[in-house]
Image (cartoon, rainbow, N blue to C red; front, side):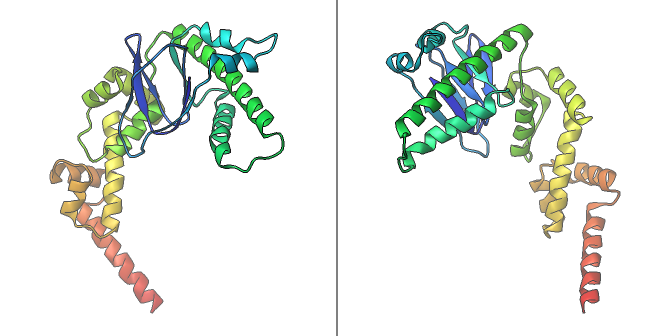
Length: 258
């Protein structure tokens, strides 16, 4: 079975290890294997394209040099993930999307042969990519986490309480690894990154005319004093001064137009 994550994020457990997958990742299950996938939640509903191949069809698609049925039976893993940044992922993605839409298209010349060729190419690319992905995973022998997933998670839960403990439990990776990767990628600590993102959100709320009290509450700040100090440090003015400067600017633009 080949699963293509068209949208959303999810995770599953295999051999006591949590494996995460997100948009455009590919999951391959060895024949006879099962896994329980869980939707991790968030703004985007999970959408997965599923391709099941019977052994007889694998034999039909094989040739003298390549036995696809044998390839799937003897791959060195039970379940594995090919992440979207792999070399073959773009080709696999395009083929999977094309196959999923063919049922709604008008039948053209050579339709069956064309479909068979696409499936053959998808299977070969998937086997190559999955074997390589599993090899890399075993060689590194370390927990793998996509920082893009953590950034997305923070954006989706920005107004909630976000701590290193929460991120650690959500992604099954140590807070020290998260801090190290945050510093490497953003030059900031996770806390500083979250505060900056909340301040950007609050600034947009102020520009929309929302009251200062509602702004800091909707922006995820637990109290006004924390919000006040962080806002002034980031922008050089207090929230109310920022609001008044906006009002003055709008009046001046209105006068100029008259």
